[in-house]
Each structure stands twice: as C-alpha cells, then as structure tokens.
Length: 254
Image (tube, rainbow, N blue to C red; front, side, top):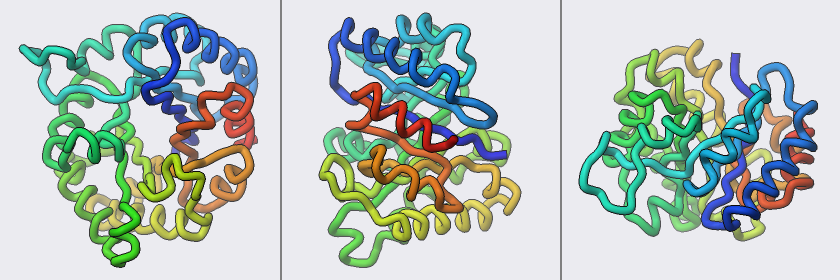
C-alpha cells in the first residue's frame, strides 16, 4: 500500500530558532490530522535536525528529513554531512537529486546512484527527485530525461531496496516560479514513472511506490493535484515555510 506523504523542503531558509518555532506550530496544527497511510515530513537544514527530531517524538506520523547527504560513508570531505550522521540524530528521510542540487552543484545521475546506495545502507528513506527543465519539455524530450534519471539513478537497485524509496517528480520549470503543471500534465508524468517502474520490476512494485509532485504545490491547487490517480502527495517548497499553508496542504488528504 502506498504512503500518502506531504514533505516540506525548507531549503536554505530559517535560522535555528525560527525553524523550531515553525515546526512547533506545524505539529500543533496537524498532530490530529495525519492518519492511516499518511505521513508528514519536514526536511530542514542540518542545524535543525536534532532538535526537530526531539520535538517530533511521540508523533509517529510526523517525521524529519535532511535535504542532502554525501555519497561516502565518512572521510575528509570538509563541510559535508554523511548519511550515518543524519541517521544518528534520528532523522528518517533525505532528499536526493533535487533540481537545485543537479543545477547548481553538478550532481549527476551516476553520483546520485551512489548517494542513494549510501542512504539506504544507513537506514534512511531517500526522496529521490527527478524532473525536466523547460527547454527539455519544449523540445519534447521530457519523457527521455525522466527515464534516464530513473534508469541511471535508481533502477540499479534490487526490488527490496527500490521498494524503500519515495520518488518526487518536480518539473524544474514550475519550481519557485509560481507556475504549476496542470493536474493533467502532472498525472501524465506520474503515470509514465509508474509504467517504467512496472516494466523494470513489476506492477505490484509500481502500485506500491509513493510518487510525490514537487512543483509549486500550494493550498489552492493541492486538492486537484492529489485527486489524480498516480499522485500520492507533494514535496512542498515555499508553502512549507508557512505553518498554516503547510497544514492546509496536509489536510487535503482528509
């Protein structure tokens, strides 16, 4: 059975105290709203992780995640954070392959495959991001781009390991632009992703895989997006920085 997940991505926002205050507000608003197969996840900067995990104790439907992890288990990589370190503070999730990491830090599918392996080996659930740019969509190569990101990034995994992943589709042209893919556009890609998973593994694995939408999802469009057959929730950027907006998106599941 698929999980229904709303994951907030704070990116490089909020100082330490602002983060704790926001997370406390979110917990108080949604603590009775997240039920069944639903899960709320907040992916924060590293400085917040330990404290957010402490605040989330006692709420098994509210989890904490990191926004990145290094591919090596340990070593002389000054300024980086390992999956083991993230896991050691109690975080459960990690975002890998976000479009900003791919664009600004040159992260390739090959590198992300290594990061995925390391995250899984350390007991973290990767939220693996894939998506096309505006140029790729206009050139009508978006299906090829999505397939390559799947094949080169995560299709090396065996079925058991793959089943631990969450996938997030983020049309790069709709991130932080205020432009959102239509529900039909989003559903088309989500269905394509599930089709590719079925071809690689099985229909049962595809049906059980959680696939999130990650392009300017907000309280106004969440209901229409989440109503689509293959969209299982959202990876929320700007709206996750406002407790009421994030909570309203979570409540859409109800």
